[in-house]
Length: 274
Image 1 (cartoon, helix red, strand yellow):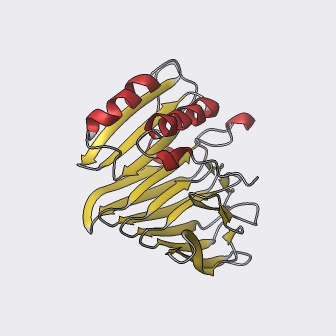
Image 2: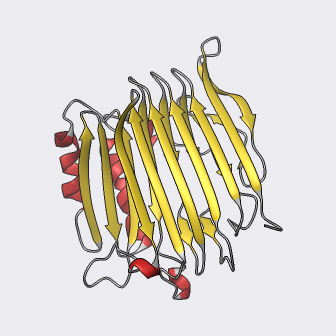
């Protein structure tokens, strides 16, 4: 499609034993995905994924491959929301794969996905986590530009998420959102709209399994917030949160991080440069 972008990003992080720290070993990025200069804060290598365009448009295609090598500790964040803009025709595709090797730590903290009116996007996510690795993978989804009075006015949003632990499939999730299929299915009686967030936790902290996450579910429930925890395997869980407002969801996900930081100390690592 004229004016559309097709881009591929490949990032590989490794543990540098001689320097006693994690490093960016290989980078190929551009187009729809740029990477900031990584910063080692003494515990974790932090970097930001940046979309230099105004967002995702019709015909755009992005492939991203991220590998975190054995023993490396990496946190990827993004400085702004990913906006799926109005698409008069056609659709956009995003395909992302994350591979985390044994003994590694990977913390993925993107900002909001905002599907705007008339947009159509397919996004596939695959997460391969080796035995002995730990991953905290966060996901935030808004119903649209709520501040502008726009909710689930997108044409279609199809997302799939696949999680493998030690090569074994432990989760495969498909979410197909379209007004033609009934609009935004994530609703709560009495709420005007609903924001969705998920925290995929692989290598669950401690040995308590679901019991170690029970306090998280109990503490998050309150006015404007609904929370559920699903134990998918012995050390794989997902925390799902619905919130009446975006700020409530952000606070709830921050509370998840704080609640688990005693067992996963890298969750509360300050990623800001001094």
